[in-house]
Length: 202
Image (tube, rainbow, N blue to C red; front, side, top):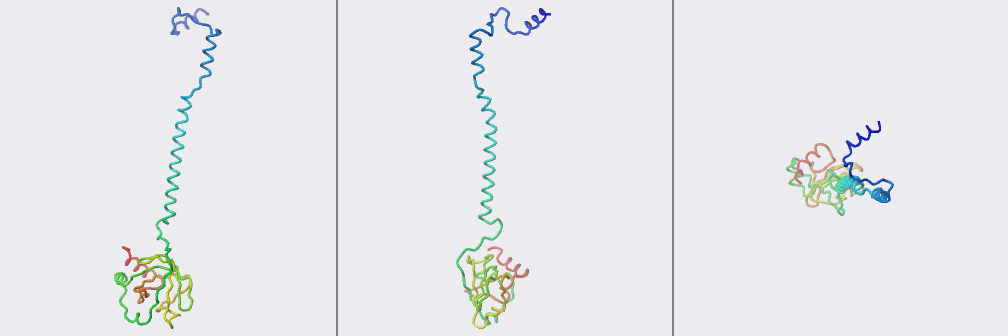
């Protein structure tokens, strides 16, 4: 049984039987074994860490892109109109003589008579002054707040328009005077559609 095992081992041993061998207990064999055992496996460690570094860089790049997009949306406000930040503006609310020469309202006519146009919310009605915070400028301004100053005797209804705090209005003006005859008024679907059509191209 012992001889058969030796023969089988001899057949698979690539080394010729005549080559001298050194026992593992010799001094030189022990030194070689110690050297092999103490050699660090740097190549394997570097190969293992490379994918992790690549993954980390990819995650950092994606995070930076998300922050950049979020920051851009915050600065531009997404699809919303930019917030007005200019100094306050005063417009004269006009008088009955302006209302006496009315023309039919159309988006084209509004485009012709509107030097300024904006949407705003009334924040105060005080005597002859109506103050509005601008929600959106359609044309010609950047003021964050507009004051409409009524002529004497027209404080209650400026140009026939009843203003109420917290209500929204669409206002157009020419030469510093508010346009009437349906070219300014409380926000309604019809007036809103007219403003959108008149100022569609800015």
